[in-house]
Length: 349
Image (tube, rainbow, N blue to C red):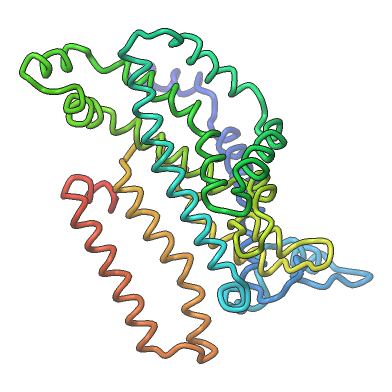
């Protein structure tokens, strides 16, 4: 009887094969542009075409023209980007601006979110609504007033501080609302018990509330980081000096009206990978320390092609390359030891 029931159940089930085929096709369509970036970066050339198609191409020639794989693997684009172009400087600008935006944005968002969650004061509702309404307008709508304030009034054009202020202002409304909602879920009885035991309001906030809100703080930090790391329009507006370009603005420098350096563009895009991949961490909420270790590991991975290329053309001694890898690995080990056993286990999974 049980076998008959199972057979009837199997007959009534819908096959998952069409769904799996659709998912596979969706994945292929999604990763196809990424594979082309990989191909152009490792082709060693500055053209997006990796195969020459004649006047009467065969089917194999057509497939070769659309297959994202270089004829020969070369690290020339990576060497040129890191040595002949100021891409390292641009990436440093992005890291400094994104890091400062994260620190300032998280600090202000945590204190503001906690105040909106726990205290009743005049203008509380108006403040929350103003934060919410500000998210309804596109960021480009604020370019002209921000340019007047930052550049004309404050004189902070083409400076780290000016762009940090702009990015922090952009990220704070969303972060405050997100943290305020998380603080609302923390029972007030925990804070009241601590106050009865003699703890000060600052002690309650820093030693009780913030440790319980680590997942929300991690998400807020990563959102602030990604706001500054990926942004292009505002950075291109406020940074008019080449030495102060951020990573996205620098990538635009490779492909313009007077030059088409697609190989440099693709190689530079891989240098931006650490920030892009950090988008996976908001869903896992692994914490800021784990995210730091992960970014360090991916950053080493993006720097590896440059080291390999330098070794190939004799521009770097093998001992120097090995010393660089050993020092970098040592830094990672120190960071992982500092994280503690539980967080270290999550970082290595």
